[in-house]
Amino acid sequence: MGKRIIQQARGKGSSTYRVNKTVFRIRLKIPNKLSGEGTVLKLVNSGAHTCPVGKVKYSEGIFYIPAFKNMFEGQKLSFENKEVKDGNILKLENIPVKSKIYCIESRPGDGGKYIKSGGIHATVTRNDENGVFVLMPSKKEKKFHKDSRAIVGTVAGAGRLEKPIIKAGKMFHIKKTKSKLWPRTSAIKVNAIDHPFGSGRGKNPKSKIAKRNAPPGAKVGLIRPRRTGKRK
Image 1 (cartoon, one colour):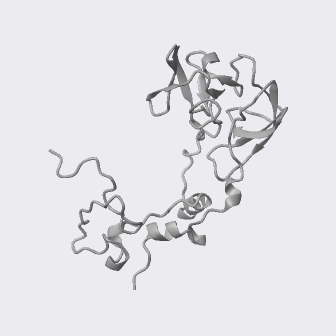
Image 2 (tube, one colour):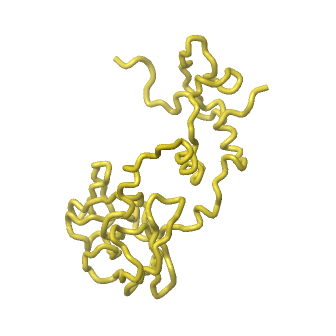
Image 3 (cartoon, rainbow, N blue to C red):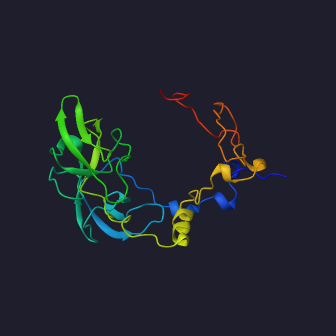
């Protein structure tokens, strides 16, 4: 009797494939109403994030942001004046061209959706009546609303990928923290009863275009392909 394939087992959400909720207890978000200045209370390590997390206190309470490079406990952050200094949270229209920024709001007030991974930043390229244009790490330019906010600086944690993993066990625990699928077993290497691509004499994968409403377990192969057939 065959077992559930990995997509089905993950979808069911057993303890094997369920992440520990305490890992994601910290939510990185810029509050809607900010005034005056804030103070960095503590730098926190979070297993769910690729960078250190800064715990910031302001007049209305406490919030968490991705730490910026050279951030330290007790540091003062400004939310109102237009001084371009690492850690200050400003509207994009007030940030000069060529400034490095991160934690950019997709639309004003959403708390920051873009550029939150360790060691990266975006760069303000131009500011006109249509909006503010930002060069993303992918080297593509993206337009934002002028009232969207961002944090000045570069996310801390650069170089985390430079140190080699060395052992498979270390990678296992890194992935386990976030309930990521690792190691990924090639579908063609399992038994025929355990996967639609399983076995196969000569180890040639079966060409399969999954139906869009196929259930987990049958939805394997080419998922929503833009094109099919041999490329000419």
